[in-house]
Image (cartoon, rainbow, N blue to C red; front, side, top):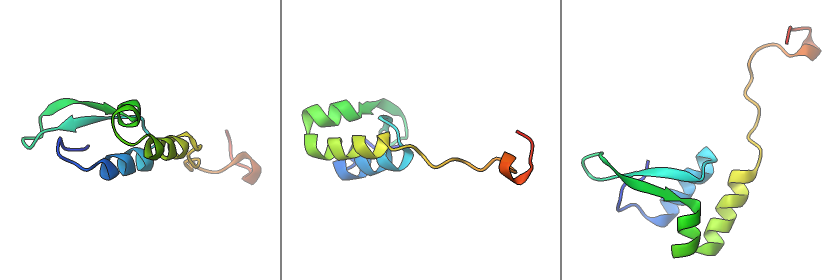
Length: 76
């Protein structure tokens, strides 16, 4: 979660890594002070960087292995 004084690049990187469009913002005491959205960043700061982040967020995440596949003879 970003802190209230975190740089824009760090917030965008966290959104990209987690493929999420909104993050809670914490103060120095780790108390919730707000939420930041990708839309907020696009309107109020760097629309181009927000666009790249949106493209990364919109990419499908790789599937999470949950056991044997049907092709390998496992049950679904």
